[in-house]
Length: 361
Image 1 (cartoon, helix red, strand yellow):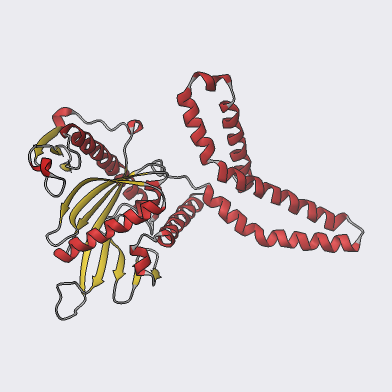
Image 2 (cartoon, rainbow, N blue to C red):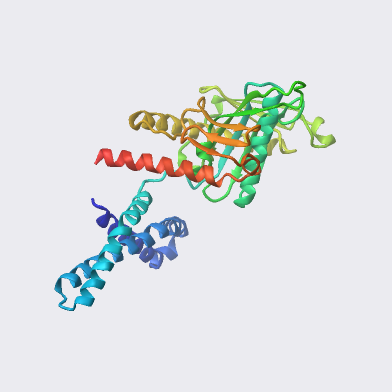
């Protein structure tokens, strides 16, 4: 199917959904209304650009016809100028529209579970993990997302050995999913007396929040649930009750914990949500790995052992190794200015998907 036909089909599909929303059937089933409304909203950019593209093609055809049929030399000249103007901008419009036709991952619109773990580098790695967590908090604030701490293990001199948070808002997973991988920092630690630059690392994992549509089945007999007294800050009550919960999923060996709430029941519910998300992520990661192997994707979410980014403090730069992008605005990035990085990653991922679709065709 060529792009012109795809554009027409997209408009027809949007009109069909709009008609359903106005039908008597919509009044009888609000669940369907919610689904259709979301589909209609998600298609607006695609439909708008599809209409503009088809109008542009019609305008091009009209000017070509005018250039060939008119005996008026001035009109001929105008028609030829407009004809060439449209031909010049058409490739860019076609390229932009093609990107919108790339299938989105089913989980892109969901919230995400964000995990950050200190890697090599001891205390400095824990401090860096804390820096990364604050970086994502600042970025989330700029997007008006909500960040809720689920579990954490603080470093001995600050930062985190491990921190787990739930990030909710519009399109969180689709935007943050390329952050999964090893983040490396190069800087002089506060404890370094001779001013030598050290290299430390932290691992980031971003997982989509599971919902009831994912068919994630967890049987009671597959779980081992332990309770313990929560550590860290939180007031006097936190050391008096076994409110913290640790859940082990025996078939996969996945372990999750939550100690953020005072209630053991609430901590268990949060931990189960994280476990469902981890099991969904395992399923998606396996599928992503197979797809990446098939199309040799340059940007992916599957290989979390890969070094994806370096934060070099002496030079004030951030380098994303997957797309070869270097920005000399480290302070801004650590304060949550991630838009340029995340946009570039999303664009490269879309371009790779588009190349894969072209190879299939």
